Length: 247
Ligand SMILES: [Zn+2]
Picture 1 (cartoon, rainbow, N blue to C red):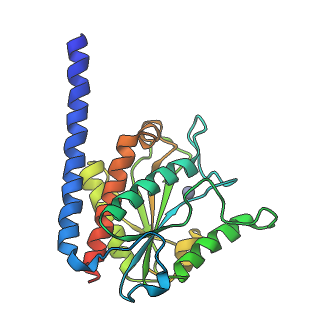
Picture 2 (tube, rainbow, N blue to C red):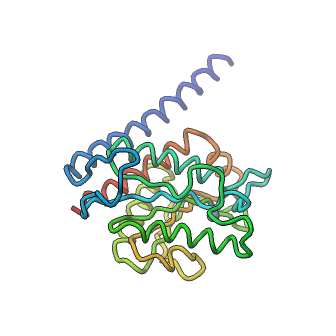
């Protein structure tokens, strides 16, 4: 019995390590092929001094502060999971010497406490961050929720305002089906005006709904470090492919 449990434990570890290694190799190879396009940036570097063709990747952890976003059945808030995944994407992209900017790095809402329209201010603040960069791509991280528990799977939305958005979205969606969820046959969706940021942003932009908090099995996975690492790896690999293509 103990041996059986131990072997299951080790098999799970080996299975995860194998998947994660494949994703890491993918990242390394894409970084290699992206070549000099991805150049290094020092922390705190003055953005005005950056070469014009250098792309900044803005990672947007959805919600924050008094805006918790969706929640699991037992009250785990989306905002925390978004930030956890966003920070992992930030770490991986930084390892690949990509300029990364986060819209938030802590549990805050990007709006004044005394504003009467905090949610709109918060979204506009995120939009303005993208406006501040001459050359950037915007990746927003969210978790999904639906009234029916059976639905699961990563879903990517893209902005119709820049034709590059769909290419990046398809890369993330395809990798989710290939490396994360074999049964995920979802296709990317163009964002309508219900997704304010994607509807209004001008730069290439995608929004990744990493999974459904309304599905108990997927909600449990989304809270694990191992699954968050896989999500971050496939998002990172897709962004690196995008940056290589933009060369
Ligand atoms: Zn959300």
